[in-house]
Length: 137
Image 1 (tube, rainbow, N blue to C red):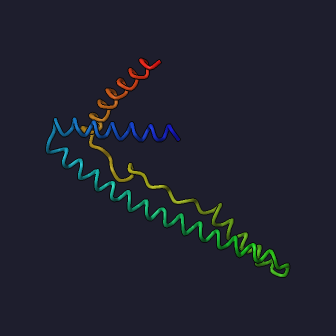
Image 2: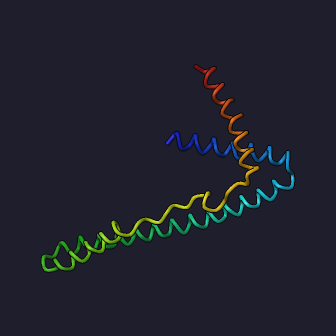
Image 3: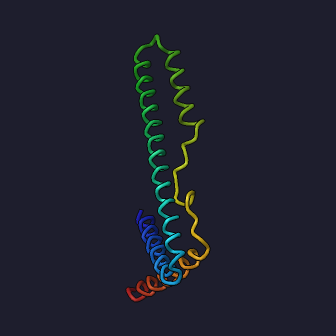
């Protein structure tokens, strides 16, 4: 968990630092890059909302089927109904794969120039963090 948070913070600082360098060296290209990035973030947000709706609906359907299964198990006469519900639960949980979680990389690819700036800033940032860690030891 801490690694994921640290990685996210590192990426955010790298992107912002690269953006600053990009802005200083190429003023017109930076505005276009920001527009592309913001559009990608909007698309990602919309896809995440759709994903969460699908996951919630799926979980609700499974919960409903399990509730029906519990009711059917209470009654010995409903064995066939229980088996059908088990089959439907298995179909939902095993056969159909979960939808893929949306990611920014599905909507946005930084330009090659932005990638160079991100790499440069990442190296500088990594050197600063590494140097600080060395001094702390």
